[in-house]
Length: 244
Length: 304
Image: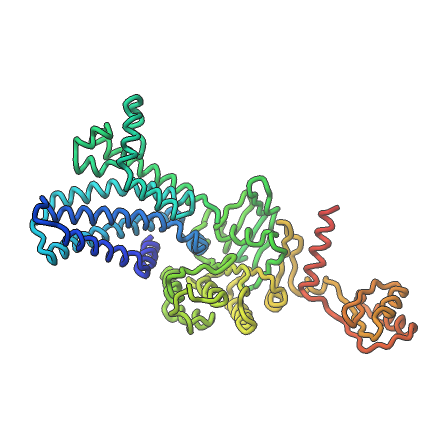
């Protein structure tokens, strides 16, 4: 298992993805720092939360290609024809996604700090808020990336998975409005997985979002984990049975 | 103990049966050539052995262990390159080797593999810049990592220039002498005939012939070639003597038999007809001819 994780990380370390997105997040943080003004209530938190949003997008792109790249480059023939079970290969990829997530959080922290220093942004860190945001984003990403992994695995195509993932990230509000229309008549609709994609907002903003999701905090937390696990299990079954 | 035993392997793609009771085995340190036309099932057999595709019934044993029950430990002894080499393109050759090394290949051994497969020169270039021949050599190098007892190589000579093909041939013979068993498929039958100890011929998913290399070739058609000035006259003279004669360029060819009667009868038929004979040669069949004859007779049998 450790060998597989080491190999996955080795591949990433020699890729340009983490450098490119790291620079992108730093550049955006600097831009936000430059454009922040003294009227902002909490400029540092704003820079940080914007950085986390872009880190989320980066992870969608990353997760959508981590399985499909082996199929598109045919390297799956080496990967599967070895002594490691496909379950372990999948787990090593999940661990790599987690490592990449931690990396992006660190990049966002550093970028925010650099931006604040360079442009003398006023205010200070609210660490409780920052950690709440990270916790909420972690739960959200667990569900979102499970969906992305499943879609990329079904279609063996990272473009489809990236597109779907980004749609979920960017137009969730529209999807919510659509779902809310049906939830009134059929309360079970609130348990659909897309509704659980509000988990980060509900954890962070509380009751305002609850009115849309119609789910309690516990329901949305537990539900996100359950849906995430279901998607990962389906991903595993498809991955394990796939003939090359 | 045999390195590989394949018994009664059956594989369906949907309703279509791709493999029919395929059975063969490989002794340690031998090279088995898996030959047959495109779509015969060679790659499917190889993929089944390395676990890339599942099979519906039958058994595969690697080093005495049943693959389905000991998949992981069995595959630890197998190096493979199926269909085409597929390194990570954004990594260099050396990085690809490091990546696929499970930790059991030392730095010295890796250097030796690079030298044997002749990739040292371009090992630090990104694989995306490699030619097909370079990728092929890197693919073989990857398959040699982690001390395999069984090598499965699907068309490893594709894209190699004559010198590289010659070197690969030597390498495979050297590896087999070290005790590594090799299952190899290739359309370059002339090359294959120089290294294979055994052949398994596959046609339409069925094994139609299993034989050691010597008997396989000796069972094939042998011919006598008469080089003459007037091929048409020679052909009719030989046909009048009861032979089936075929003209190839400036020669007329008849089927040989094990004694010298065909040769003598052919010569006397040409002499009687007053045909000037420039040269006479007796030809042992090559692998390609043997295979074509075998496939043609199998296809005729199926057609009936």
